[in-house]
Length: 193
Image (cartoon, rainbow, N blue to C red; front, side, top):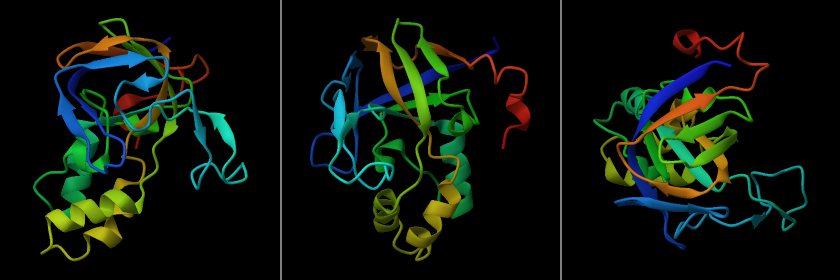
């Protein structure tokens, strides 16, 4: 099984009712997700991101934690012609470096952090208009951001994951990604795009 590696750069939580996440020194991860984050919980109420279910259906929460790549954020910023795109504006939880194609990880990829936390990728985090509005408000002179954000962030907005093994996660710790066995022979990190 092929292993990809990287480093945790930041940990953030988005308090309930907020749209922007805030950086924390470390994160306590339980089976419900990142403690203090609005997306934690064993279940969630289905909405527009789960069209397979009638709105309001209680389902398992496979979006407990959002992980974004520093390299992908830099690519989005370049496409939008802005100096930076901060993970907090996208309500993300974990910023990593060393995985420039993180958003393309297949479902079931296992992310093992050196401190013991293990997360399972449940898919790509598709871009939406909420962060586009936040970024637009920070760069009012760039009048096209709210319209261009979704296109620029497509296949670059990171992944959502659920907790397989809880623990504490800290900036600076390393991680490795184990791809599902079926993907190992076809994944080429430097050509994924």
